[in-house]
Image (cartoon, rainbow, N blue to C red; front, top):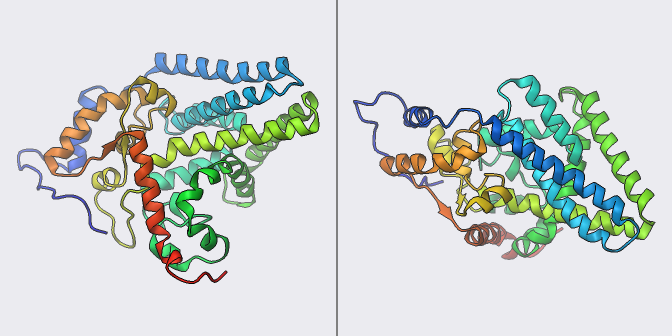
Length: 347
């Protein structure tokens, strides 16, 4: 990979790495301090959103209007997932124990294995967009690079031909994939607290499905399930995919220093307070990757400091609108599938 930087050496009057000097600026600005008031309000609001959705489900009952409730609960599940993300990064609680308890509760509410997801996400943060090290770009149904396309067989090879066009339809399966991957991870003996994770996960499935088929007739329950889980998957994908898809992919021993590894593989999405709420602050992806434990409401304030620091170093800092971010991500997926389109399909 060709790194997009023409970095200058640190000033002899400013000791330490490029990241260390940035970290000092951020710390001096008070941006690593906890925001208990903000998270109290946010947890209360998300809890009300989640509980209100299920209350509406019971009140609406046997009616096709329940599909509107399914769409509302997809949004609520997405907000719970974003809150679980912040808790896992210790943005909410400083200590591990309360973070783990809060994260497991949030995970249980949406049918996500907290331990499995935290391990996967930690590996992503350590090596974002690194082929072979970042689990988020491991070839599965999709291929993320032309090398992966050349090696693809079976279903990934079939899908890879037109994966940019199939991406949004496939996102409807992302909620289901989250549940299945969480359940499959229970077979891994290295997973910590497997019994607890399995109990919480299957308790969610049991309560969720019982509620659906107890309140609704079978056909309507299945329709609710499809709409709810499908829109939940689309929401999750719409939050996380614009952050790294279409950005440079690292391979082999190509591992720049920490600052460049995080900045060059991440993309910010422009927007105001509404964007921050809908995307959970992850639209400030560069700042989040540099400072994962920074409370999400501080990311917007960190942005000008980080951007100015990158400009001084000559490190590219990419920020686009949401539609542009998706266009770049889909164009990258289309390029990645080119070797498959250019050869005769062999299953």
